[in-house]
Length: 242
Ligand code: IPE
Ligand code: IPE
Ligand code: MG
Image (cartoon, rainbow, N blue to C red):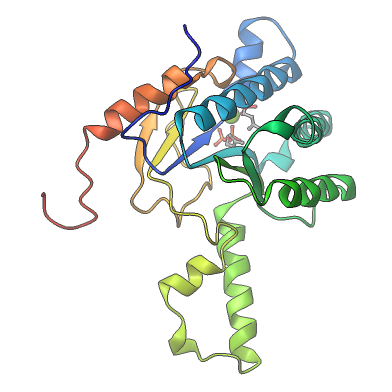
């Protein structure tokens, strides 16, 4: 397939994806799970580049959930090393690109050097105007909403605001995704059909697309197939058609 270079009309503003199926991809090849994760990391690099080329504004990728700490230590370490590599490379090969990087999720359980890499990458890319690539790392909607509730409760307790001033916008503004538009389209690879604690608040009116493709094989053409279907849908947001 030819590399896509042109902007594509009819794109949603924000696409969020689950990078799921690395383990199964590796198992089918008789390889260790780590090989699947490495191939998955290569797949997201390509996709980020292509999404920027076609003119997408926001892409969020679920890289590591708050529940993924349950995996064997070796696998967690392997995933964290891939994150390190990715963040380092954005300082090099993505140096000339116009992609802005943001990382959403809890920070307190990540290694000190990863937090430093995150801060550096976010700072370095903050002024960019192309695709915003949001990486969900140690991310879970429940902890995100809990954290927001805690922040708002603290403001009420110290008299900065009253409980009846709490509204949906305030809740949104206290989530990790503050300032990022809600996802229009959510894609999950690998045939699984569940939300696994991903963007539960933000996905209230998102369109969903499930692909059987295992993450390491997922390419821009698969994403564009989802976009094609998305464009045929009638988003009603609780109203009436038209
Ligand atoms: C996605 O692939 C990577 C992460 C969740 C970090 P999996 O590792 O979940 O792959 P499967 O679902 O076992 O195939
Ligand atoms: C969700 O995938 C998290 C990521 C894709 C990073 P999982 O593979 O962890 O989800 P479950 O356990 O199948 O629900
Ligand atoms: Mg999985």
